Length: 515
Image (cartoon, rainbow, N blue to C red):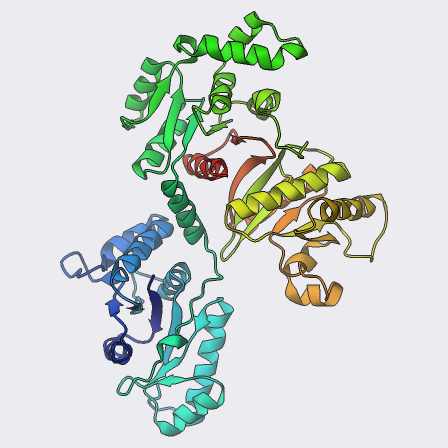
C-alpha cells in the first residue's frame, strides 16, 4: 500500500513543489505518482483525475460522500504501482466552495500526510515561522499528520521554521525523507468506515434473507447490494408479486437474487418438522408449526437456523417483537449469554462508537448490563474496533452514590469478573469517558477514561435518547439496531428505514455472520 501526501499550497506552487518532492523521493529509490484530484472538464481530464464540473454537480446534489469515494478510488489506483502518491490540492473557485474542506476530507479518507506550503514572499523570517506554526496547528486540529512545512523561504527563514520543531522543503532543493511521511491512520471517517465494511463483505460473501421481499425499499436495497457485489440475497414472497413490484418501481433484479415463496417451498414440511422437534417440549404441535412456517419471518429465521442463509434482516413493516420472536425461540443466545440486546454503530466525523442497549431491554439488571457490555465488546472486535467500555452513569468513580450508581458499579465488577481481558470503567459520566482533559481530572489512572469507544447506557430510555441526540446533533450515521447475543445474526429495521439504512444493516449483518 502506498503512502499518500497531500500538498496544501497555491496553484502556482503546486507543479514545482510536487515535482521537487517527487525528484527527491525518487532519488531515495521510491516510486512516486502525482495525482491531481480534479481536472477542469471532461476534455481536460487526464490520468486518474475526475471532472471538476461533475464534482460540482455531485456536491450541489448533496452527494459529497459519493465524490469522496470516487476520489479515494482514484488515489488508490494512482498508488497501485507507486510507493508514494503526491496529491496536489483542489483549488477553490466560485462553483466549488469549501475546497479546503474537500481537501481535508480527502486527506482523512486516504490517511494522507499533509505538507502545507508557506510562501515566504514579502514576509520577514519571523512571519514565515509564525505562518508555518499556524498551519501546523490548523491541520493538527483536524487530526491530520503533518510531516514537514514546504516553503520557498531563504536559509534564515528556514532556520526560524526549524527552531519551532518543523522541517522545511524547498521546491528548488527538496530534502524530504520518506520516513517523515506519517499516515493519519487513526482517523476513521464515515466514508472510510463504510468502505472497510464493504471490502470485508466482498472478501467473505454471505447470504442474507429479507422476508419483506415485495417492499419497494427492500427491492431497491437488494439491487444496490448486488450491484456492489457485497452479499448474496434471498427475497421472500410471491415471485410474481415481487417481480411485478420491482418492474413498477424500475428495479432490475440481479439474476443471482433468489426469490422464495414460503407457502410453495418444498422445504416447508422439513422446516415445520424441525420447528416442532425444537419446540414440542414447550407445547408446539405439528399443525401449528406448519402454519407458522407460512409466516415469512419464521420461514426466513429457519433458513438461518438451517444454514441456507447466514443472517436475516427484517422490520421495515414488521414489529420488533415479531422480528425477534422466532430467533429467541430456536436460534437462541450464545453460550454464556442470556441477554439479547441492541446496539448502534455511531459513525462520527473521525471515529466510530458503539452504543448499547438502545433497542431491547427497558430496565436492565446488573447481570443484563454485564451481558450487554461483553456482547458489545465482541461486536466492536467484529468491526475492527479495540473495545474500551464505559459503563455510563450520572456519576464518575466514587463521587456519587445511590441505587442507580451502585447498580452500574456492580455491573462493572461483574464484567471484570466474567471477562478480565476487557478494558472497562464504571460508573463514569459521558464527558469523562470521551474527553481526555476531563478524564485526567476525574479518573487520571483509568485506561478507559477519555478513550472510550463502547458505551453501555444504564437504561433503554437513556440509550435510545442518547443515540438519537448524537445522530441528529452531530450528524452521525447511526447503523442499527444490531441485535447481539444470538447464535446467528437476526437484525431489526426501524419502520422508517431508508434504502441506505437497509443497505448498511445488511452489510453489518453479513459481517456479524463472518464471526
